[in-house]
Image 1: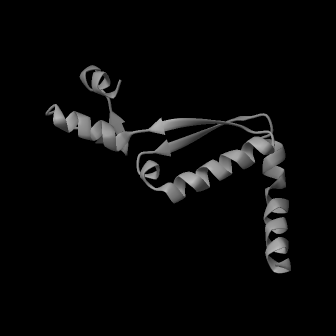
Image 2: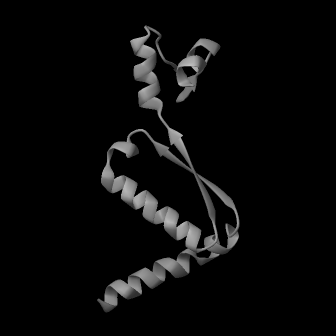
Length: 98
């Protein structure tokens, strides 16, 4: 029990400069499609967000629905196009995304 407390305090001491640096900052947290299907990942992300709020950060969660977008595009017969890991979204694809 003591060893665990010492370990946690060491992590917090290491994080302190970052906590100070990002206090009152808006932090964007992307919750990707893969993460949304795993309850354990969601719980860890929510715990992290709770911590961020408690130390004065201002997290904003954005939805990353790439897999759903690709499935919706495929259902319409449109193929998703990527360049360097980024989806290329033409006007027709944007209608599907919206």
